[in-house]
Image (cartoon, rainbow over all chains, first blue to last red; front, side, top):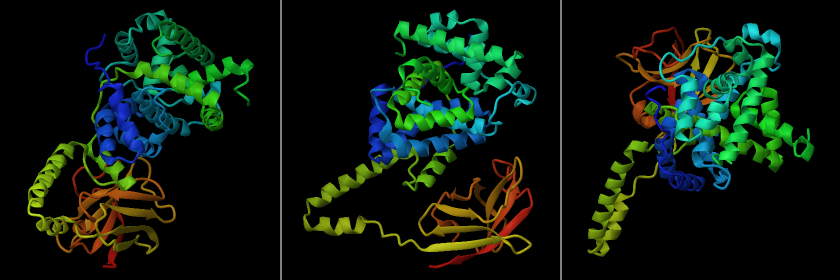
Length: 199
Length: 238
């Protein structure tokens, strides 16, 4: 287990939900506080996916512009505030990454998939997955994943790799990687739902 | 694609899972987002999976972004440029003001005059325009600003581009002395360059603006390092 894996800022679900509700009413102070509280976690997520500080800053900016405009669509009954915020940032980053790709996937793409270098410092994707497992008592669920699906899901989630990039990075056929992702997600869902962790 | 029919439930669930994980191809991503806007069951499937998947990311070591990110957000939204970290300081100042006002109110009539005095002078937006062109005299960019605003709006005309892995940086050229960096011009047709201070202060003694080609984050030295491609005189309407 890698050191330096710290918990996400969790000042309490209620606090963030309260801030979001005030942002929805146009409260600029609440918006500043929301930014101060959530931006280090969201920026870290963005950097890992786009792998470029300046670009991650741009993604974070766009995400917060969107948060200001769409805070009124946040539904506290559906998701925790940090989940909602994280989804906005991840979707921005993924849209940006995918926009640069050829819109059709084929085996031929494996050869010219975007070169991927693991981040030189900080915990690896699998470290982070295991850390999350520790934190959330998900250990059983993550442990239950076979090594292939586990690594594929960790790389896709933390580094934003597409199927073809996963195949290139893991040196496996595209079909194998796709089925790992599918099987891994299905297993994760069964386990999470059974454990009542993220129903 | 009717994804809400019961027999499609498994397929929807799989698509939503991969959407949340991020492996969905772009075409399918766009379609799912479009469908979710009008189909509640699809929207619910996506947000359920986003919730499950987000659990994985809760232990990413946090990284504090540079202060310019917040400044840019505030500038893009046209909000009051309050820095998150300045909140307490400002709060204290306000508290001091209200305390003073409360004491003053004991004096009855004095209050009115005092409150009137505290009111900030109204800011009349007065525009400033700069037409930036290159050596061929073709217009490449138009920058506009208003007194009191803390940003310049820059519109790119035609297809001016800094090139791959480069950025345009905006500079204030004083009558004497070195160019002063105003900031990197974000990519896009009409963008904002945030300023530390109001336009009229930043450009008070500046006759000209210029644009140079720099590395993506801007000049590392504080002076133009790449070619200065465009420049133009500042025209003030105030």
